[in-house]
Length: 419
Ligand SMILES: *Cc1c(COP(=O)(O)O)cnc(C)c1O
Image (cartoon, rainbow, N blue to C red; front, side):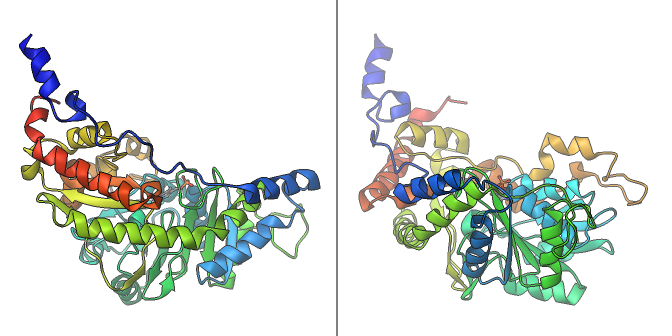
């Protein structure tokens, strides 16, 4: 009896109360007759792969869009990262520095070329790789820095380029969340030596799956092209194979969809930025909620994710998992995102012998003793994500996000006891 009454009095939707919102947010992906027509054209041409013109057209347009000279369109962002590493000749015995707060693809690409991912910490205000941590991770084996433009926010490219120059290192940009993002007016991807983008289904421009390598170097372009096309070279015979490449070619169908998606991309990016600015302002006024800090050198944010931080003390000391569940029940598609730093993930076990303790490397990597305290705090306690399509909504949609956060924070006592 008493429990019944209590349930009726609960405010939070997770405890049976009325949710802030019942309407869905913007559906993703967005498409119209542009995509339908483009697909039909490819279908009817009979040129679905080699011999078609859409892939080359997309490579040229997308590379130019990112202020890069060359593009090679491939099967995924992971493949684009792997090809970028191979094009630079990175392999056995080499170390590559990455942030520990990123998607697993950043590290698996390195391990797939038999090189060693070395984990650096992130900046507490931006969640991008911390240049000081990068400097202290450099060894005589370091070949490259692989910054991630996380959530669509460019990493501190000034500091990273200067560290790379001083230590003779390559820079590979993981721009898999950062289409159109700009660092001091320059679009990401080819600010360093080479960069990778993804067009997987959740991404801001998508063809279901897909990726692209961009660079300003003709030499790296030719290598990346050969690596995605069975080691072939442009001027040589079809059955001659010069580089250790496999088949990573994008199809004409994917390229056709991406060309159509690019037409609305600027408009989408502008809307995401406007809504993000609105949320920054509103969320910074909620006690216990902290948006990330904007750096004025980031002249355009791609907002694949709207990442914000909560202060656990303001939320009754409850885990971010419970807070996220409460927000989801209110109708807000918040996610906890990365819930542990990459070096804690079980898949690393499979690389224990090679390359992590390979005689050729002649060093032993022990990921169990690594600590990156800022990334750990972000993963375990602080970091919450809103997906990009939420930012395509209206002002009212943003108000619902704000209202749900305030409501959960104000009624956090109702969540006590949940695990
Ligand atoms: C999506 C993503 C990738 C990999 O892209 P896929 O196309 O899924 O292979 C790599 N790095 C980051 C940071 C990503 O978000």
